Figure 1: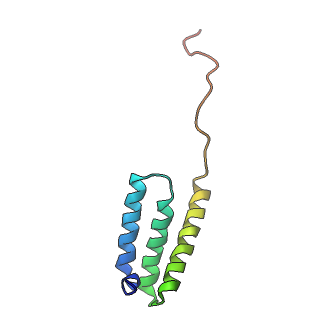
Figure 2: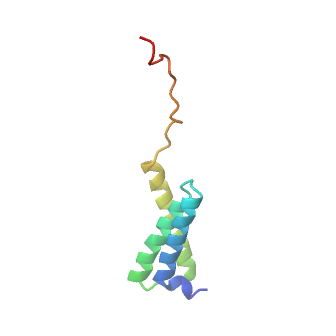
Figure 3: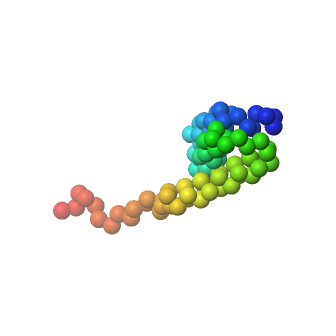
Length: 91
């Protein structure tokens, strides 16, 4: 298992699986993990990191950072309910 975490395509596959989970279970939770795994795929591909604990901690940090950025980009909106005080058919 420790050897698999150092392969970039494992992180890419994890990002795709997490993105698909986000499509099935919407809530913007798994999207942060998917973006973290995608960033990890790039980091592992560019740098030869072998410390498993450091890779998992970096993934957790990147996922948290991605989730926080997503919260700022997609701010909570109101329910969208509109109170109608006038009927359009009244003239």
